[in-house]
Structures are given as C-alpha cells and as structure tokens.
Image 1 (cartoon, one colour):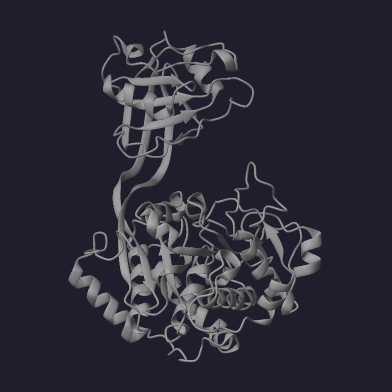
Image 2 (tube, one colour; image 1 turned 45 degrees about the vertical axis):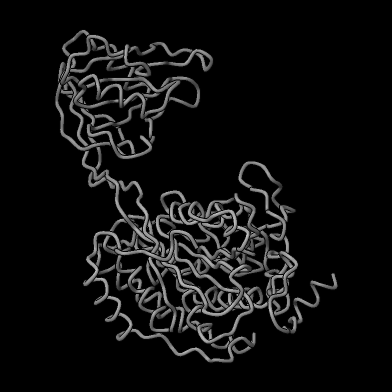
Length: 513
C-alpha cells in the first residue's frame, strides 16, 4: 500500500512524546479482548456493544475537553484523538501506522471589522475570506475598476482581475474591488502585488448577488486582510470616493500549511488482493468536539476492529480513520491518490460510517443503485457492486425487524474519492442538518420538523448529543457488513475469498433474489 507504511512522525509531535502517549493510552484504556471465534456473525454482534463504542466516545469527549473543545485536524485535539485510536489498535494486536499529509489550515480568531473612518463614522456587516491574512489597517480607500451601476451577468465586473487594473495604485491603500469574472484569489493576489494593505470585495449587484460576499481564497498565501461587503455598502462607499474616504479593515486569522495524519490498521490475515476498506473520519470541525460527527462513526469502527482482532478473515480488512474530512475529504483524497492502479484494483469494496448516532436519527443507507436519487446534482453514480452493498445493509435491517431508507449517494463523505476511481462503496448515516419528516417520525420515532442532528457542526456536539439506540442498531449493522465482506465479496466482485464460508441467511436471500 503505497505511502502508508513508512510514516516517521505525527505532525508537530515529537517521536518520543508520541510513543509515550500511545503506550500510556494503551495501558490506561486497553480494549476488551476479542473472542478468537468472533468470525461467527452472532458472536461478533454480541461482542460489539454499546458500552464498548461509548467508551471510545467518552475518551474522545475527554480529549476535546482538554484541548479547547475541538478535535479538528491541525489541532492538539486531533493529534490526541489519533494517538488514542493508535493506542487502542496497538493494544488489540494490530500494527497501526500513521499516513502523514499536509493540508491548508485556516482559523478565524475573531470577527472581521469593516468601518468607515472618514468622512464620517460607520460600521458595516462583513466577513473574513477563508485563508485571508491577518491585520488591522486604517488607510485611504482606492476603487479598482468597479462597475456602478452593475453590469448584466453576461457583462460581469472584471474588477481586479488583471494586474494592469492596479496601474498607479497607491501602495499602502485599501483596495476596494467588486466580485465578478475571476476568482477571489486572483483579485487578492493582484491587489497584494500592487502594494494594497488590505482588500474589500463587495458584491456585483445583480439579482442573487447583492448580500455580503463570503468566499475562499483557496489556500494559504495571501498575507493581507481580505473581507467581503454587500453591493449596497460598495455603492455607498463608491459615492464617497472623492470625499477623503478612509476605511478600517481588521482580521485575525491563522492561515498556514499544517501536517496531519490518517490512522490505518489492517488484519494480519486475509487476501491483500481483495481488501475491504472500512472508513470513518476522525476529525471534528473547529467549532465543536464532534462526538456525534464523527466520533460516532470513528468509535464504531474502532470497536469493530478491536473485536475482529482475532478473527480469521478470508479478505484483508483495512480500517482507516481519515483526517481533514471536514475541510473537503482531504484525508481520503490523499489516501486514494497514493494508491497505484494495481492497489486500487486490490480493493474490493469501501464501507463508510459517517455519523451513526444522531439524536433524532433515521436509519439511512447510501443509495448505491441510484434508484431513489438518480445521478445528477447531489447524487453520484455508484460503481458496479455498490447496489449490492446497499441491498446487504437494507436486507440486514429488514431481517431484524428494523426499517431503513436510502440516502443520496452524494460523495460528500470519505467514500467519494473511492467511487471516483471505480471502487464499489456503501455505508450508513443517521442524518445531519436535514429535517425529519412526519412520516419518518412515525417510523423511527423522534421529532418531526427538527433536524436529525440539531448540534451538527456546533459546540453542542458533545457526548450528550449521541443517541445510544442509534449506536446500538447501526454498530450491529456495521459489524455485520464488515464481517460479511471480510469473508465473502462475491456480491460486489464475484470473489468468495479463500476457504469455505457459509453465507448468512440474509446473503442467501439476496443471492436468490
């Protein structure tokens, strides 16, 4: 597995400190021993308990509490989370590795400020562009090729898109630009190169483009403050351009390249040329501890891995805890990018578990056959075999008397990079910011008209935000599917694995369908 076996360090943490942390974690929070006969479906499901999953959730909550309330990639909270998972895996008998990668880190430390200082005093609504630099600048404002009144969509503003737009720009002034045509990064780069001390980008003024501009510069690199404004504010300031207009722009940010890791462990036994990848993202957003999103998925697959440590799978099972998912699937994208064509071919299926403990949950299964959510905006095509993954999960729920329903195969989680290279995938989800319908409340319980997870991406995503009934049901389904594919991937690629394996009742029914 290219790029995943020779990790030498873990972000900014020294090797000695890392080893000590892992050993301490393993001693203080050692996992329950796995039954060597857990390759029996009933025994594995009995072994993967709510208490086991929640013990990991409690550990992640403790880590977040001790690290400023977050476990986001690039922070000490994520580093400690990765150490915890590593230690648990090592204590269970795995040989885990860290797969290190760099990523763009951004944090806004305080709200942006945009004020008119002269000819009169005023404060305006504004927002910091992602990857803006920091600074507190008071200076004269210079407008650069703006279009007031606005042009049509076909004749959009080109303000700041060419270096020539800044010909004669007074160095040290604040550049006031208009949204349109080129990227925000191009505008900010040209402004900084011309000597601007800060940048204000206001909206174009066309229908749908009138409010405060919010955007990203793409990556760290711009060192000056860059903030947004509405078209109305831009027009107001433009009217004062010959009246000694002075502005104050203030931002406080961290914008830099940092290092983080994926945590990877695989079973000692099994066919490496028919591997089953089991994934969950380990990071939270900066705003909160992420004990539901996605401590729930991370804790579930960790407990399954621990209880499968003594199982003798026919196919290698590779467990991965991805970093920087919340920043755009960066950990899974990096993992897949390091695979050779042959290594991609050697992965039979990818199972993804991103949020399986939502407080107002629904038992969602990814729509691998695109029957409920046809390919288009918001729904990606499921590679061949993905339909079988969906059927296996849904048939499992049916076999234990539980309802389930499809959710869009959107590619919004870590399975996305896998399906882009043709690897069959599927998984479970209990809901995020979507609103539970009355029909769903009647089937699954909970409250209609309320989000599946009201604390999604918020500081209140704590241990109290996790529904243990959902954890119980979804962890059983996860363990069932993981063990099934560990022994037999015929449903996705025609391979049964080595040795004899008796299909479960669910599999027999699927095969007969």
